[in-house]
Image (cartoon, rainbow, N blue to C red; front, side, top):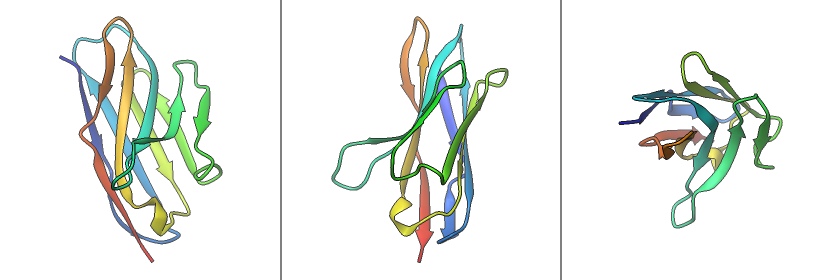
Length: 116
């Protein structure tokens, strides 16, 4: 069974930084794209950033220049470095992974709170 375990969320003041991690475990042959999403209350889950197995990245306009996604393929882990955080970044952040031949998996979510 494939599991995604996130860590690194917490409370930070506006302008501060946090680094989220998401480790994928289980019977895995290969992971294609990995990504981070967030879900504002009452709204649909929205993309924050994605990264392919080859390292190509894409970002939501609202986080470009502030967030950086990266991955360690040897550790099956994806990271999200969040800098210059704003109160509007407050949310539950979810990671996902597209596991080749098995499907799309999601983490349980980690809370990020940015105080003004």
